[in-house]
Image (tube, rainbow, N blue to C red; front, top):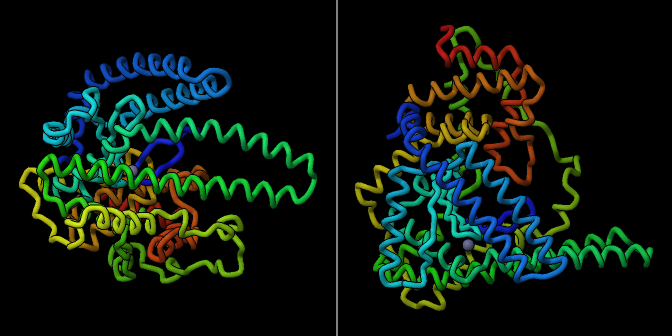
Length: 433
Ligand SMILES: [Zn+2]
């Protein structure tokens, strides 16, 4: 529901199976993956031809080039098994789309569903009709009605061809910016400030366009959603639920939790591990300061979207209670919860994996399961620290971007010595008591 830049292309984005079942899934979907890659290549070629016939000259060439790059990058993700093909999630999403399609014939027939091993509660639709649903949505949303609402919103984008329009605009504006910056060089006056203004204006404009498109997708999506005979109020509940989502997690890690899980028989807990670095004197992010953060952040956007949809559809003005999930959805949500740690492991987010394992442990979830994940993750952190590339797997502290709890965690991790990491890793892998 936000959007991000992948290889220069704007696309829309909106996070009980253990590893054994995972392996079975991987073998089962091998054929599907192979078939998907073949079809994707063919469709990609066709799409590039279409772009070139529709847009002549520089724009057409640039569009084709970027799209081709994007396709190559996306295929890398598919080959890296970032998506699962044949699964219960997939069946569930297809059945919801089927239900939506019944009274909304404008929903395209050529949709291909991919479930991403990604814990962020997002969904997006690629230009060729590939529809990506992150596993995190199953974990985060309350029921299938909310899932249908997310799908409807994305279908709204797809039907209005929002991604393609933004994509074209991005390429065209890029050209304009190049010319504008060139002219500035001739003027020789306050170049940096002016270049900065151009960038800023562009970002604000993008923000406004984005908001416009999000609202359009909400209205069209809501119509599709209601025609599918879903409980109306759940559309707004879905927006609120996504608003609650913090990229890391809204849960705070308590000091007692650190003390509980890092006081080991042969390594006592040290208070200095929790010591925080002082960032107050350090002007760490000049450009961020200059932007009005609120106009770029997604959360105030969401508030506006909720207000907007309530205004145009008066039946939504009153809040409704969240529906209980069906047993089928509950099973999928539980499965997605058990996949959270394997997913972070797959994407090599080892630091984040430890943070989330500790949250599950703090919540009193399956202790043996999450402790064993602590062992696996700390083993990776140990390896990285030994090879001087911990930066790749553990975030640096960025005070204005991260919650206090996450900063505290990062401080803790960066404060541990190589030896201490090794001891924790071995303890939780049951190599040493
Ligand atoms: Zn959206």
